[in-house]
Length: 236
Image (cartoon, rainbow, N blue to C red; front, side):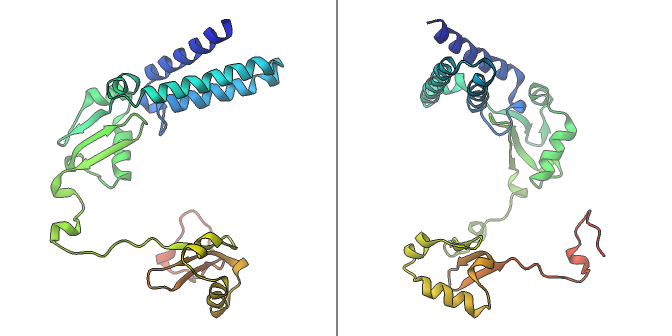
């Protein structure tokens, strides 16, 4: 029973400490996921130092069970608000919430940097920005600054078509050929028409019009065209 108590105490203590540290430290993972990976990794590696394989396995199984229990509990609407941190508002209707910034321990320049990455250089353009439980920042622009949608202009657009890969890194994706009811012979003929071989193709995709797009390993030399300048690279 001592092993069980220790495992529960470690899990709960780690969860509380991560919650106190703040969402920013979690960075794209929720608290439970981060704690689960951290604790499980340390438990699995402990036999290398202490030569206690049996005890480590018991701890690992216990942590997995606790993780599954917490995930199941998080499906309950009432318990979810207790187990997970709520979003923290950073900007509301163009006004920066300084209390929110202080709560998530984010300096102003970092907030502005995150907004620029999402394409909003001016805080006045934002209806609401919030830090989610995963540590990521979600931004909802004001109506006049959001991208124009086809529905705004009463445009009818065709259904989006997802190009289907048939060759990746020189390997044929046979199950996609089967899904499209295409033969390998057709694919090879299309490849040979372009003077290519499957082994030299990085990506070949089946397009909506029934044609094949091919991206091979050859980089086009643009002969110092300023439009293709690569920062930080010495060109000769």
